[in-house]
Length: 164
Image (cartoon, rainbow, N blue to C red):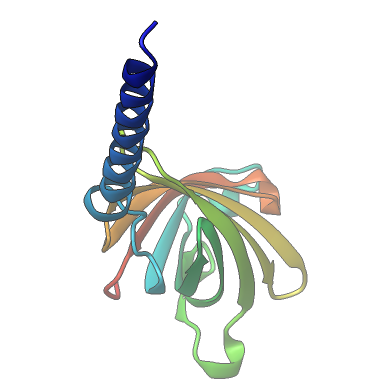
């Protein structure tokens, strides 16, 4: 074994590894970054299935504020609109219910990124918990499904940057 050849091979292997690491870093940070979902969103949820029939086809709208810390998400929401069997109404000021949000972004390099949110809403009469599974279509639109502990609801969710 040639001692000079060993050192040359070792140096070339280390440089190749460093170059490959740099290329992967650049691809992750510049070509395929985590989506920028920080800021204001408008969310519309439509109940498809429920154990309480008056909630079927109910439409709720929220204004949501999200901030990102790495892959973790935090934020708050306020209910601004309801269209249900009891009628259609907008919530303004003190009549709005508030929710806290926690979640995370699942970065998918070979597909669409996913966002998972858990909300606890201090609703009228009781606290409720919802879970959202969203697909990031773009930095201005997310779609998906939700599950709620209120009347075993589930249905569809649309999130967008502009108001409905």
